[in-house]
Amino acid sequence: MSGLKFLLDTNVVIGLLKGNPSAIELAESVNLDLSLSAVSQITRMELLGFRGVSDAEELRIKQFLQACHVLLIDEKVEGETILLRKLTSLKLPDSIIAATARVNKIRLLTLDDKLASQFGVS
Image (cartoon, rainbow, N blue to C red; front, side, top):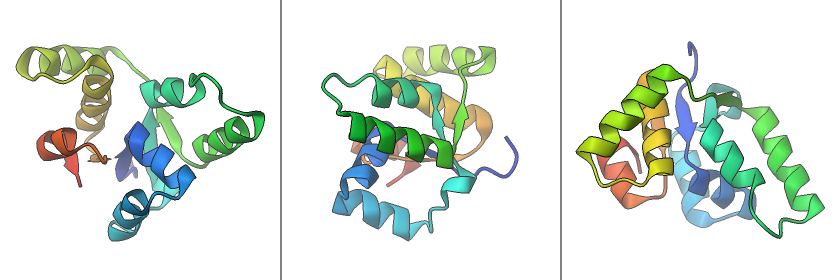
């Protein structure tokens, strides 16, 4: 997708919403602009699917998601995910997120050291 610079991993979004210093530092280090950022469809599902999320928290999540783009899982992402699952020990959600970044040729922002070392910016 043209113009996008970053794909935000679920842990980065949660960190930003909760004011986590590591997430804020990462966002500042790359001059994060949500209008030039995206999340994977899997991240949207993870964020909105948490059990026990209050109405206020859900509203904040939805507002955050509206500020950036959501990249859907298509056949290209599916194929790249399958390849990553065969080549790495990543869990399925992490594989989908990494594949989404790779297919769309954008940098992955994550707080997961393993994922960052293989596919992203930490």
